[in-house]
Length: 131
Image (cartoon, rainbow, N blue to C red; front, side, top):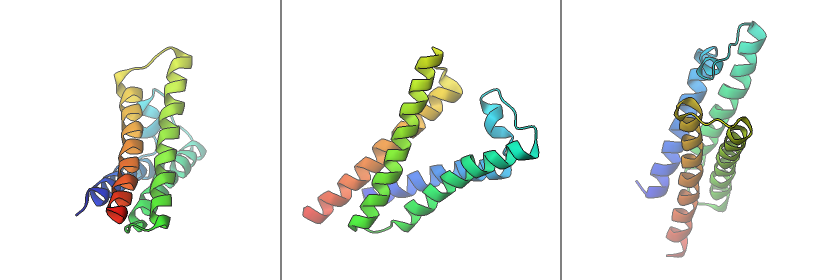
């Protein structure tokens, strides 16, 4: 398997894991950050956002298995979403004047790492096409 394929599959697996945990145990998501999802509506919201979006990202990455411009667009879009999450998380930590190793630091590192990995995957595909 190519570097591009490994990076794409790893990113898809990370998003799938986040989505599955949120879908099956929605109360765990806010609990990680000291919050609670004590009502059915709150748990439904967690499932919609923290399960639905990561599972959609994982499915999109799984479908982008080639090296076409359309596949590149998927990798770039998911990478941009990952970067956006990392930047917004960092901005929140700055605004709150608090960045802990767990959980905020760990998720910041994961989101930034996914953004970098997907950018590298796009570049690896471009190199293969032009090389």
